[in-house]
Length: 458
Image (cartoon, rainbow, N blue to C red; front, side, top):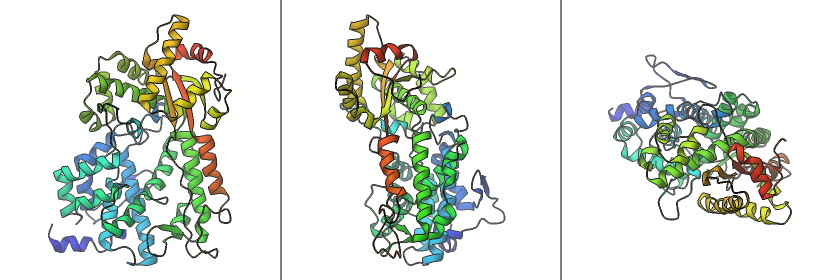
């Protein structure tokens, strides 16, 4: 594409229409999404096409049958939501903080923000680096950089159709990047900050697909109608009339994590998958490079092809018949500290701060004691620990713009009682620990450990 054509397409990224010859793409929740030739050229690249086979919610479809939607669908939703956000910002503040080129780069980043995702959503990213360097899974936004810079087709499309250096798009997607100065820091905040189009789309989309109302309480129209850059343009804030809309977003996040993303059976499936993958990687049967480049079905096929007994048994539990591990003990992290003093509390407190490899060692010691006491042999992979929410924070602080209170945010009780309360409850009630075991071992292991099954129905 010549320079004149590129400049013409850059005139109005927020309202960039499809041509008459380019039919829109219809996506649940967002309806018809305008898709001109630049969008379609990017969608046709291998990294984005792979997202058709990567489920947005990982293994949640084992619990919620409707939760099988793809990251491709979500990426289009983020692009559509990004267009709306830019439309409001350009209309309200013109080019004060954003240029047309910035808007174009932001929309490309919206489409590409998930290309670095591994199969099974975020599950594999929870595997920490192995102490001997035998397993290392980098953050998905860090991996996106490699894909954007190494895929020749993506590089060509970004340069020729979008007028964007791929290095810039990679730096916007990587939320820990310091590249690009103030302009790209602003775009990173638009994509990764509290009021980002990614969160606005996935909360609504995931809620709709799994069949719960939580994500649909967000007052998106009022939120976008009140969003504005703070003076200096460092980050987004809301005018006072938007506080209630921010509260709906925080409330939706709290409920979706507590009830869907960290549902006990979803987390049990994830714990089994992580152990199956780690066993296969450590045995040398599975190549990490091939695994992370696969989609969900390809990755599951690789795992099913492993001869390692632990991997085979765990993967079988995720297949037909769904033999998910059950809870030996389950409770909030606060409940761990309220257990009676003794070996069980010491174990759970140690597991609370342990990484996957340390937890494996601690649980191995438990099983050796159990076998000595009962004479029953138990494989090491049949007792697992899962901690949901370690290191995760619920955003609740959004600056107010033009507030009569002066410098204020939704974290201030005079502005919102709901936001700080939800953040507090998120720490106390949403973050949970589980000890999980193969179904036939649950009651005997609970008795051996002297643990009442907190939060588990009789």
